[in-house]
Amino acid sequence: MGIVLTAVFLIFQEPILTAFGARVNDETFRLSKEYFFWITLGIPFYMFGQAMNPIIRSDGSPNFAMGTLLTGAVLNIIFDPICIYVLKWGMMGAAVATIFGQIVSALMSAVYLTRMKSVKMSGDSFKPRASLLKKILPLGITSFLSQISIVLSMAAVLNMVTKYGALDPIFGQEQYAQIPTAVIGIVMKFFQIIISISVGLAAGCIPIAGYNVGAQRNDRVKGLMKLLLVAELIVGFVASALFLLFPHQFINIFGAKNESVYYTDFAVKTIRIFLCLLPLSCLNKGTFIFQQSLGKAKQSTALSLMREILFGVGLPLLLPIFMGLDGILFFMPIADILTAIASVLIIVYMGKALNRMMKTPAAKDGHVESVAEKDARTDYIITIGRSYGAGGRSIGKKVAGQLHIPYYDSELLERAARDSGLSHKFLQSIDEKPVDSSMLYRSVGFGTNDYKSIADQARWIKSALHIITSVPKPVGEMRKDMIFVSIRIGLAWKAL
Image (tube, rainbow, N blue to C red; front, side):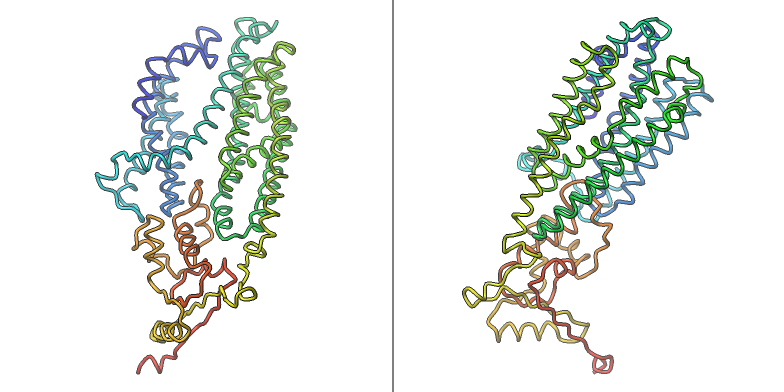
């Protein structure tokens, strides 16, 4: 796919650059073409590295996943001045430094691919399978539509900036023509940094929410949603306050001191209008992503498309008709206000839905209600923890025989391995061990391998009376219908 996109971008280079407002003047277009050509050559490496990153996190190596990204970024920063100023490659140097970082990140990911913990790769692993593609596409299409809608919004904004900037009495002059495009591009980068923090907060909640939904702890899900939304608002308020109070300092990072007064004035104005409602921007993004953790992919996609297509494309096309160049600046806060109205309605609906789920017998206080009162049965599970040599397995089998109830030991792992698709050996490596809470953040998908396996076991042992001598600790922690028995033996008896 990366090679195909590289070919498409190189063939349609000029139309693509034109669509994103690169034809402000001849010099801007020349520099854009130079950078675009070289950066396009790095697309296959970039796509491979980005695709591998969530896979590495899901495999239980979040630190390595972060390391691949940081290594590429740091190398880019180091080689930028070398390529641009020392080697005097100019715009090409900036692109080459970026590509070099992407190549190193991709190579690190490729090495990890041969040393994965839970999956052993073979030639057969790379064959396309229709059954897997059917499962992957519905999940991937949501992110694809969200990202492509952002691209379309950016294209609309930059085109309108070029069009209405040319009609402005100041920026219509050739020597100042590039200022609106450059400033809008810089301010949108500031916006993307804050939104990246927002996305990180929300994405970190996805596996936690999914884990608690599976455990029927909807009270925790609701508490997590509140905590996330409060955190999103705090991030937005802090960011907006900084941008509104110190716009000159932020714009100077990009060399505004060396530009004309028209550049500085327009940059300060753009920052204060464009970024004034970041709390709503963060709230909206958090709402979109949290819905995915509840399995509401369609609603999440609809809200995202409404924000980026209906408002993100429609408003930049409409507002400049009445407000000129300023209309492009005001589209962002207006779009966030309109989207926030829909987000608040969704939040209220999700809260009520979680409240209803919390009132059901299966979810109340995370406790599975015993049916003993109704039909003289019990849903409780007896788990036996034992020290080595204490005879826990033998005792468990005898108790199960006396009570005429099922007995399970390693069968749990075998069933979880079959249902989850994970290797039996991998499940053995995490069985009956405490799980570091950092594991909850190992994937921005719908759950981590470790917690997925635990949830598979938890679902299987639900709603029946068992004697179990092997149960992962997190399963016991998330259930309140278990009777725990611990059998220990002294060293003197072990010697016998």
